[in-house]
Figure 1: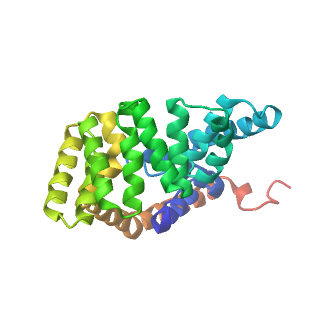
Figure 2 (figure 1 turned 30 degrees about the vertical axis):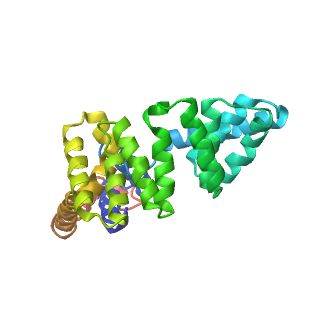
Length: 272
């Protein structure tokens, strides 16, 4: 939470008299605020549930290593956690048994890209596209394009993101990433136009989509979060320099008033 969070904790502790309870309350408060606004922090409930599921599947495979469905689900969890090498290892027996379904091929392709097996990953994603060109509305293009962008293959990334934007008409992340690919190719004018398109899509999108893609919309219009951050810093500065000292004095005064009202709080031997 930084310095502002520390100030909040000090003030809340002075008011409630419980430093630990104040810390828990602030953590819960900021998790809830982030959940319904920025969405930068991970969902702790989802993280715990996914980790528990991972442990259960790992134990399940120890008892039954031939369970292909468990291997696929565990591989998908590893991919979500960016553990590509572990996903490749756990899913390799599935392919040794001749698996050729879209879910397995796509997951293995993404895992190979994460693990650095670029050629194998590209081939698997191409095969996944052959199996189902509309799989998850262009998800193959997104995964392929992001890996190409990471490797600075801007031309290949541009082709992937153009296909993604064509498949997902209202995509925000697709336009922002396509803008990055064009910028990498030196086409700054097209990149600027794509960022404007991404922001316009964000403004006109329904609430649930704005919450989901707010991070990418702010990548298209970085002045917006910068403005919010400046306002937030000013508010916290005002709170720390003006309001916080008064609240601390008020809390201290309330404690003294309570002590005078009950002499036993001041003198432990008053009842003897």
